[in-house]
Each structure stands twice: as C-alpha cells, then as structure tokens.
Length: 391
Image (tube, rainbow, N blue to C red; front, side, top):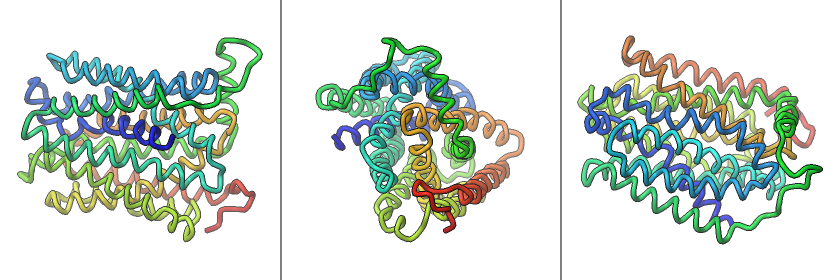
C-alpha cells in the first residue's frame, strides 16, 4: 500500500511544479508577458486551495480512498488537455481544473497515512512519504527544463500523464481501505462540514499551523515562477538552469527525509521549526544577490532542507488537531498553503516589476519571521503526551 501512496505523491508533485521552469518558454510560444505566463502557478493554486473546504468533508464522510481515486483520474485527463492545448487560454483553463484534481491527492493521502500510524511515529512516516513528492519535484523541475530546451516542453507533460495514469490504475485496483464511519443519515450535509471545521478550529494550534503554511506558500513559492526570468535578465541561464534550482529544493527535502529519524532524536518540533526558519530563505537570498546558477542551486538545496524542517513539523501538528476529521484538517492545511501560493506570484510579480530584485528581501524577512514566530508560539503548547515543548 505504501507503494501506491508513493505513486500518488509523485503524480501530484510532478503536476504541481513542472511548469515553473517553463514560464519564459510559455510566454514566448503563446506571445504573452512573463507575468501573465506566471499565472499558470496561481491558476493551479487558487482552485487547489478553494476546493479544500469541499474535498475535506467529502473525504471524511464518503471515504478518503474514493476521493483519491476520482481525483487521480481527473488529473490524468486534465494533464492530457494541457499537453494538447492550442492556446494560452485553453491551457490556463485546464490548469484551473488540474488544481481541483490535485487538491484531492496529497492532503487525502496524508490523512490516510495519519490514520494508519500512531503519533509516536507519524511525523517520521509522513516525512518519508513526502520523499515521493520531493522526488517528483526534483524529477519534474529538472527534467522539465532539460526536455523543454531539447525536444519541447509538451514532451514532459506527456511523461507526467504516464505517471498520473499509473497512479490512478494502482489506486483503483489495489487501494482498499476501511469505509468511513457510519452516520445517521445517508448524504453529507452542510452541518457535517461545519461540525468538522468547528472541531478543527477550536484547537488553539489550528490558526498558527494554517497561518504559517500560508506564509510559506506566499513567500517561497510566490518567487519560484520568476527564477527563469531573473536568470535570463542576469545572463546566467534560462529554463534549464531554473529547473536545476527548483529541483535542488527537492534534493534538500530528500536529504531531510533521509536524516529525519536522527533529527527527531536530537530535536523536538519547535527546535526543528527554529532551525528550519533560519535556513529556509537561503535560496531567496542567493536569488536576490544574483548568485550564479550553480550557487543558486546549492542555496535552494539548503532551502529545501530548512523548508521541510519547518513544514513537516507543522504537518505533524495538523494530524493531531482533530483526529476524527483528519481529511478536513489536512484539507484546511492545503487550503492555507496553496492560498499563499496563489497570491504569492501575483504580489511578487508586482514587486519585481516596480522595485526589482530587492523586492525579494521582503519575501525573505516575511518567511523567516513567520517560521521564528511559529517555533516560539509552539513552545507554549503541550505535546501529544502532555509535556510542554521546551526544547
């Protein structure tokens, strides 16, 4: 079953970040400004975010596995539409639908895994599962850039279709999980969703979790669609080099997953968040200082490691907010994260157009500050075992 989960994470991750290195190519092919082409990121993130309040309660009521299977098949169809899109408007439309489809994959899969693993090992299990998503990021961003400049950007989209199709087949035939808890009525009602979100938001940790991941998405992934453009402006590369830089975030995340068991023995979650906050802006700092693409890739690898220290710790906290409503809890987490990713490129594009590269220092201060505030605040809450987070 873990192999099926891995395939699901891989399919979602590839569809998510694969277009970021291609923004300048899409702008030229469809004859639109780079800032307009960068809307491909927001067009994915907005529906991903706003589908979460619906998908979460549906998963809790009708079954997480059913939502997962339907969304995998929809993602496969949408990626085919993107590959065959004759113009920018059509591609943007399919990208919007793709955001909804992907919204029912990663959050639901993490909720399923949280159901399977007890709190003592849950962060380790989720962290290792995320290796699949991070591998998809490395594979997607790096290979998309290489294939785009050699055999065309559509070739990588067809490769993405093969991955999502395989995941859909695997989930359909092999993913058999217990049905959801029986209710006193046969169909989901608005009151069910309200009850789920009331239970989640009544936990004092909830707003801190969701606010921090929103800041992560807004600052870090608000800037990533512009890496290729900034490299071109500095005469330091293009889509291929941007793909390497984006892929390096995944490399850092994979390093995190490989060392996670050791890290958990050394640090509690708030300490992991503090270290993560100190490291997560390294790539943005290198980008702001116009570092060569090789140094930029190394800096984004550090960013990937720091990001996972912070982000995975918050995911573990989310799994404990309301155990009976985990699909809704992870959906709210994803809503917050992708809402930040949706607005981030719009704001960052405006800032880069009017201020230039120094605008990135705003992202750096905001991202680092959010992580440090989160780590400090979480120390005030008890852990699942009741002991205070003092480390």
